[in-house]
Length: 107
Picture 1: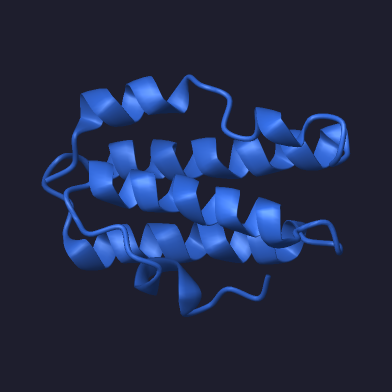
Picture 2: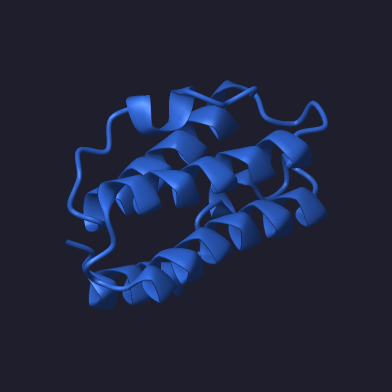
Protein backbone atom coordinates (compact mmCIF):
# COMPACT_ATOMS: atom_id res chain seq x y z
CA UNK A 1 0.00 0.00 0.00
CA UNK A 2 1.30 3.43 -0.95
CA UNK A 3 2.30 5.69 1.92
CA UNK A 4 0.94 8.91 0.44
CA UNK A 5 2.11 11.07 3.34
CA UNK A 6 5.66 9.74 3.07
CA UNK A 7 5.62 10.20 -0.72
CA UNK A 8 4.46 13.80 -0.32
CA UNK A 9 7.21 14.48 2.20
CA UNK A 10 9.82 12.79 0.00
CA UNK A 11 8.65 14.86 -2.99
CA UNK A 12 9.57 18.13 -1.30
CA UNK A 13 13.29 17.41 -1.05
CA UNK A 14 16.21 17.84 -3.44
CA UNK A 15 17.05 14.46 -4.90
CA UNK A 16 20.28 15.11 -6.72
CA UNK A 17 21.96 18.06 -5.00
CA UNK A 18 25.23 16.08 -4.95
CA UNK A 19 25.37 16.55 -8.72
CA UNK A 20 25.50 20.35 -8.46
CA UNK A 21 28.71 21.51 -10.12
CA UNK A 22 29.36 18.26 -11.98
CA UNK A 23 26.13 17.88 -14.00
CA UNK A 24 24.56 20.78 -15.86
CA UNK A 25 21.97 22.68 -13.81
CA UNK A 26 19.33 21.96 -16.48
CA UNK A 27 20.00 18.20 -16.34
CA UNK A 28 19.78 18.24 -12.53
CA UNK A 29 16.50 20.17 -12.69
CA UNK A 30 15.09 17.85 -15.36
CA UNK A 31 16.09 14.76 -13.35
CA UNK A 32 14.49 16.10 -10.18
CA UNK A 33 11.36 17.00 -12.14
CA UNK A 34 11.18 13.44 -13.52
CA UNK A 35 11.20 12.09 -9.96
CA UNK A 36 8.56 14.59 -8.81
CA UNK A 37 6.35 13.65 -11.76
CA UNK A 38 6.64 9.98 -10.79
CA UNK A 39 5.66 10.79 -7.22
CA UNK A 40 2.74 12.94 -8.43
CA UNK A 41 1.55 10.08 -10.66
CA UNK A 42 1.78 7.59 -7.80
CA UNK A 43 -0.12 9.88 -5.44
CA UNK A 44 -2.79 10.32 -8.11
CA UNK A 45 -3.16 6.53 -8.31
CA UNK A 46 -4.08 6.51 -4.62
CA UNK A 47 -3.16 4.31 -1.70
CA UNK A 48 -4.82 1.24 -3.20
CA UNK A 49 -2.84 1.27 -6.46
CA UNK A 50 -1.97 -2.16 -7.79
CA UNK A 51 1.58 -3.42 -8.20
CA UNK A 52 1.12 -3.32 -11.98
CA UNK A 53 0.03 0.34 -11.89
CA UNK A 54 3.03 1.25 -9.75
CA UNK A 55 5.36 -0.69 -12.06
CA UNK A 56 3.95 1.15 -15.08
CA UNK A 57 4.54 4.53 -13.39
CA UNK A 58 8.14 3.55 -12.54
CA UNK A 59 8.68 2.31 -16.12
CA UNK A 60 7.46 5.66 -17.45
CA UNK A 61 9.91 7.46 -15.19
CA UNK A 62 12.78 5.25 -16.38
CA UNK A 63 11.76 6.08 -19.96
CA UNK A 64 11.92 9.80 -19.08
CA UNK A 65 15.49 9.28 -17.86
CA UNK A 66 16.27 7.37 -21.08
CA UNK A 67 15.22 10.48 -23.01
CA UNK A 68 17.04 12.87 -20.66
CA UNK A 69 20.36 11.05 -20.87
CA UNK A 70 22.58 12.75 -23.40
CA UNK A 71 25.74 11.13 -22.10
CA UNK A 72 25.68 12.67 -18.61
CA UNK A 73 24.37 9.69 -16.64
CA UNK A 74 27.46 7.87 -15.44
CA UNK A 75 28.00 5.48 -12.52
CA UNK A 76 27.34 7.96 -9.71
CA UNK A 77 24.27 9.44 -11.36
CA UNK A 78 22.97 5.98 -12.27
CA UNK A 79 23.37 4.78 -8.68
CA UNK A 80 21.70 7.92 -7.31
CA UNK A 81 18.75 7.59 -9.68
CA UNK A 82 18.34 3.89 -8.88
CA UNK A 83 18.56 4.58 -5.13
CA UNK A 84 15.90 7.27 -5.43
CA UNK A 85 13.58 5.07 -7.49
CA UNK A 86 14.12 2.18 -5.07
CA UNK A 87 13.17 4.40 -2.14
CA UNK A 88 9.99 5.44 -3.94
CA UNK A 89 9.08 1.81 -4.66
CA UNK A 90 9.60 1.01 -0.97
CA UNK A 91 7.28 3.89 -0.02
CA UNK A 92 4.72 2.14 -2.21
CA UNK A 93 5.03 -0.97 -0.07
CA UNK A 94 7.18 -3.10 -2.37
CA UNK A 95 10.76 -4.35 -2.41
CA UNK A 96 12.79 -1.63 -4.09
CA UNK A 97 15.21 -3.99 -5.79
CA UNK A 98 16.80 -3.15 -9.12
CA UNK A 99 14.37 -5.45 -10.93
CA UNK A 100 11.84 -2.60 -10.85
CA UNK A 101 14.21 -0.40 -12.79
CA UNK A 102 16.39 -2.60 -15.00
CA UNK A 103 13.82 -3.81 -17.49
CA UNK A 104 13.70 -0.77 -19.76
CA UNK A 105 16.73 1.21 -18.52
CA UNK A 106 19.18 2.31 -21.19
CA UNK A 107 21.52 4.27 -18.95
